[in-house]
Length: 143
Ligand code: SF4
Ligand code: SF4
Image 1 (cartoon, rainbow, N blue to C red):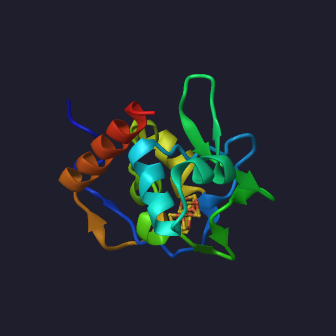
Image 2: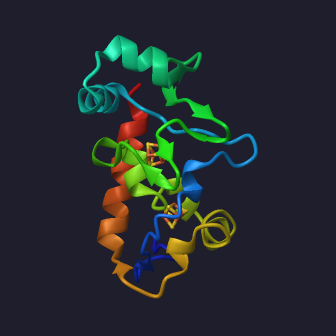
Image 3: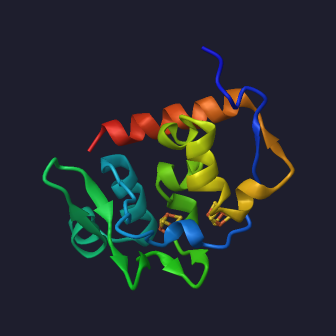
C-alpha cells in the first residue's frame, strides 16, 4: 500500500521545546529498560534512583518520564538536559505510526503544532521515516 508520505516530509527542528510539554491530558514519554539504563548512566546515578526520581509506572509495567509544571522533568528552559541520552520517541518525533496514519492526523497533531514540521527543507526521505517509525514501535514494545 502506498503511503501518503512516499515523497518524504520536510522537517527541521527549531528546538522550541513545545513537544516536551503536556498537551491536555497527554504527557506520555515512555522509557523502556534500555532507555532508563542509558539515562541513569548519563546522569551517573543508579537505576533504582533514576526510576524513583524521574519515572512513574503504569499498571501494564511500562514506565514514563515524570512531568512537572506541565513539562518533562528534563526540560530546562527550552532545552533537553539529557539530549545525548534522550529516549527513542523524543528522537523520532514526529515520525510515529499514529501521527503518520493519515494526512489529517499529521496536519492536526503535527503541522498545526510543531514549527519544525512547517519547514520547507530538508526533506526526510520515506526510507528514513519508515526506519524511525519502526524504531519507535520497537522501543514501545518493551517495558
Ligand atoms: S527527555 Fe528531553 S526531549 Fe524528551 S520530553 Fe524530556 S526534555 Fe523533551
Ligand atoms: S515542537 Fe517541533 S520544532 Fe519544537 S522542539 Fe518539538 S520537534 Fe522541535
